[in-house]
Length: 216
Length: 190
Image (cartoon, rainbow over all chains, first blue to last red; front, side, top):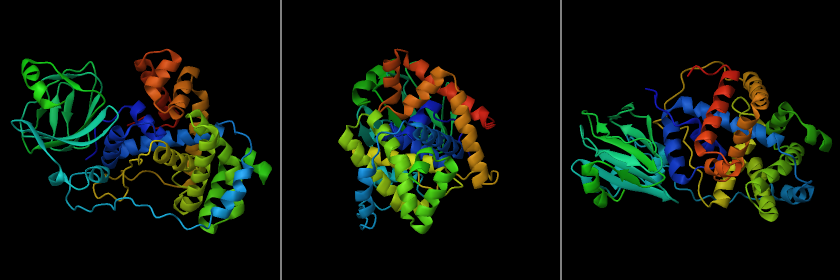
């Protein structure tokens, strides 16, 4: 099944340019795993990056660096200590997300936000936060708005809001103008990765009541 | 070869990179260095590196090009695109001390492409030429935001500041630019 809701062009372009922070990069890379359409878009944006590189005015000659570099070509490669990819058959987490959480859903520290709603922080970079949410089937999240942008990638199950019905691979985009009240599908618990670049602003009465406890 | 390097066309550059990967050809590597190193330095300087740091990252990037050249596939990308991505990842690692997060093509969750047209080098080069032409044909205000996207560390808000326009305008210009590029490539069906 292919995703129907995608990141905006400017986000894909920023990902290709290498200027997104880690939380946003994690969301985009996880979506790319599930979306051939956006992989093609990012490849095109990278081709733009390459075309622009060819057109840069060259700095002065760097031939003085070349000789030293030619001598280093046969040096042994440093051993990179990257965490080995964790093979978790049956995981619903795309690899970039598995690496960010260092395992699978069971290894996360889940925090209960309310009846049927749990949250786990995956990573933070600057003002951005990437969190996983686990939402009980059929649950309605308190109505809330956003001071910045909130992007939500569905990994399992689905949810609906005023803008649509989101299924695995889809990204829901909410910004300052969106006040919504997402409702999880009735089938299975909805699991999604949400990235915010500013705290959420809860608007409804319930939202105002629970907001101090949510650490949103 | 030195003169060739400063005016090399995309096909020649790609050929050099293939020879570096396949034959470990040092002469081709030197030629690639002479073309790309001064351009990579300009790229890094625009992103705010000082002279010494820019030269340092250029050397590391070109060393990475040598080491990874075997994995370059000319049916998937032009040499310039591949070298851009190598330098970009190195910049994120070195300058932000973060690891670039990418999808894993071997991920069991990877949703595959529908079988598309032939994945050959000629088709890839034609679309690359079309892309370059389309980039040149963009209206000036759109071309500016596209270029700045690749040459600002914090692009969209900073572009808005530098040009004195709202963030929404930056984003809509980028969207217009991308949709023009898509339609120039006959690829606006999705």
